[in-house]
Amino acid sequence: MGPTDSSGHTASTTPRASVQELRIRPRAQVLIIGGGINGVGTFRDLALQGIDVALVERGDYCQGASGASSHMIHGGIRYLENGEFRLVRESVVERNRLLRIAPHYVKPLQTTIPIFSTFSGVLNAPLRFLTHKQQGKPRERGAFLIKLGLSMYDFFSRDGGSVPRHQFRGRSRALAELPKLHPGIKYAATYFDASVHNPERLTLDVLRDGEKAGSLGPADARASNYLSVVSMGTSSGAERAGAGKTSTVQLRDELTGEVFDFTADVIVNTTGAWVDMTNQAMGAASSFMGGTKLAHRAGPPRTSRGLQRPRDFL
Image (cartoon, rainbow, N blue to C red; front, side):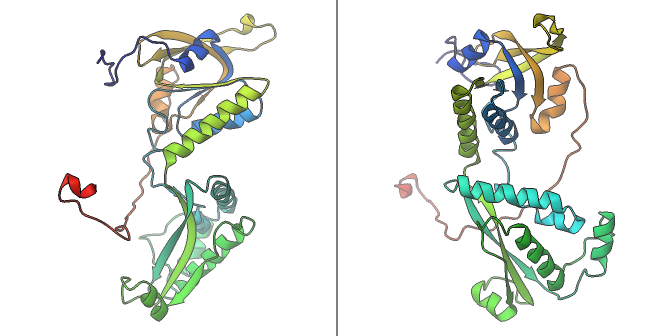
């Protein structure tokens, strides 16, 4: 076992091919920092357009929020209340696209809403729609509002054909199909979104697709992980005739400790929750991260199995 770096990974003196590609030609039109799904998706999109693009990630690909998400691929149904129809439409289109192109990772997700009233929230809904603000405590949504929202959701999904339309059930049928629901319900509504079972594999597939597109096109697409940004400076465009200013970043190989310069016309920061820390490392302090809070309550799997001894697994 060789020496380890500051992250606990075994240090290596053997140059990696992905790092060597960046060192041999330390320049690109666009440098993307961050190897989550946003960075990798941007990388692929630019590669398909023939842009000379490079991507670096300080750790494993998809190690942050992309890998530790709720695994939901949703169409943004909650944004309907605020009238953000364009966002919902865009999200639904992307959801349906993933269901079509990655059915081995992205599956339809059935969601059931227990409903305890018929008209609750009707008076509060218009005010929330117009002001985009919650008035007082969260209000219960009755069957009328939920039916309206799900019908609109189906309308935005009409071109995809990837998930079934929503269904409404009365109390008797709902309890017959889902006996563990609260006996006090009046209705139950079921709609479909999607979930991704292996976000890491999906991210890697998108990355490889971008690398392949770059290798076949007129430009180049290169990516490497365990490369962190140390600092950044700006150099004039005199290095290239007719070019504007370019940015030079110092990259450190986290496995060998070696540092080298890389120059790009445009730098894209897709480091997610670390966006401000990355900007600070590059000398451009920012305060974009305000935080968000979500609550997910996951029920038990349909079937479960307890293991008393290691050999029970065999």
